[in-house]
Image (tube, rainbow, N blue to C red; front, top):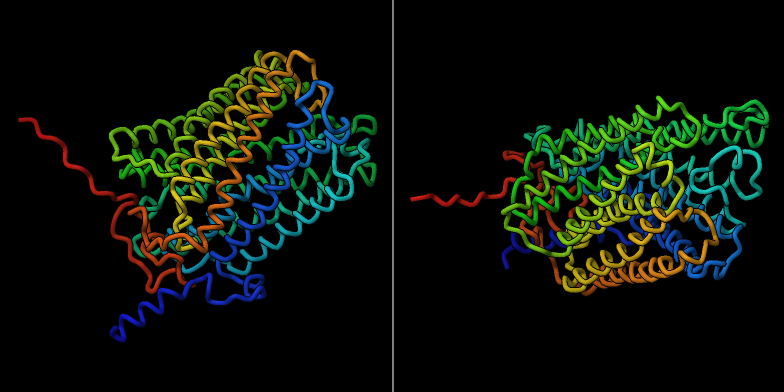
Amino acid sequence: MSVAVAELATRSRVHYLNESYGVKSWLLTTDHKRIAILYMVSITFMFLVGACAAALMRIQLLEPAGAIVQPETYNKLFSIHGIIMVWFFLIPSIPAVLGNFLIPMMIGARDVAFPKLNLLSWYIYIIGACFILYTLIYGGVDTGWTFYTPYSSTYSNSHVFGAAAGVFIVGFSSILTGLNFIVTVHKMRAPGMTWFRLPLFIWSLYATSIVLVLATPVLAITLSLMAMERFLHIGIFNPAIGGDPLLFQHLFWFYSHPAVYIMVLPAMGVISELVAAYSRRRVYGYAFVAFSSFAIALIAFLVWGHHMFVSGQSVYAGMVFSALSFLVAIPSGIKVFNWTATLYKGSNSYDAPMLYALGFLGLFTMGGLTGLFLASLSIDVHLHDTYFVIAHFHYIMVGGSVMAYMGGLHYWWPKMTGRLYPDKWARFAAFTIFIGFNLTFFPQYILGYLGMLRRYAVYPAQFQALNVLSSAGASILGVGYFIPLVYLIWSMRYGREAGPNPWRAKGLEWETASPPPRENFEETPIVTEEAYAYPTRPRAVRV
């Protein structure tokens, strides 16, 4: 072996995972890739906690009179489930894990713009998570994930402050992450990486970062006002002491509906990457897909009132919010139609990441279409606060965001670890999750249509069959999520070496070693081609 070849082989074995093994080196790292791994471990743990609460809820609902817990405990279960899954899993999952790992490599940079700020954002996340775990251990919170006043600010005897403090703190993690991504994309792109050569994943995270920076402070202000009313008895939301009962909902949903797209927009970016890679085609209507991310982000700030159709706001305001809610479906529809057009006559392969992408397309479309029912004033009066809303929300969040996160994790896992997972098990898990999800949540559409209200520990006996079916589906879904946890961990030690680009995909992240070196690239890359520049097949010529 020549000296040059030996040096190259030695250098290829030096990467971000093995440059130092000490715990201290991880806890003080400023490498965006290691911070992504820290986030991945943290949010996986929080996901497991939230999933345990969901499992107990489904066991409780096996019987009309309740199976295992009292109604007060059930209130705490759905509250902690919602708080953890929204703020400690769904919002940070794709941006903090996949975004942190990939953005610098996708744009040809060595790291994010503010590496120390990046590490600080993870520590802030951990502090917020500790407040939530403290709340859970010492009795829980029973307000629901929405913290509706005046119950949360005056009457609840549960640990409202601990839960609200955890959410308040973790919001700063989101703000710092969004700020870091915006500056990184603006200032650190490689030579030749123009805006219209950016991967669509970058476009989606850039739009998400803008929403994070602009919307999250509103949540912080809202929770601060709630705490002031609870501890200082200042009349802000409670009408008994001079407050406005609708003000909290306006402030909360002004943040929380954009927060839906904080969870969905990154997922859409992942799907663009998967569809292009496994169809071997440039995403159809690249510019439309890119700008639709900004259209979604903009309109998301204008539709919060559709959560308040039965809350006492003006009928005329409700009509405006209803029209705007229908409008936001247009840019989402553009993405779905363009992904479908990309797949049409593509050289499609059906590896596990592609199966997750196809699952996303089906489940997200179902969730989006049922969202139109809730955007209609007359229908929403019947469906509001029923299990129809639960089913719609989970088809968007779990069927959309989680499917995309799983697809992205499988797609970039060889890049993150340098190892391949067993593809047959991965495909089996994707099918299991899809089937388990539909068995869990489709019956809830029917339950909601029939009038079963959410957030109740007991229910009329005529709804038991559908609830048993939903709980059975949840057990299948849980198995589906557990299988990838096993084989992905297994693959880190026993999986075959992946090589730099096992999928033959386009993108700068595939032009470096797997796992990547500390600085990502030996030399700064120069971009000379469009995104997704897959070779086009020659068209048949008629004779």
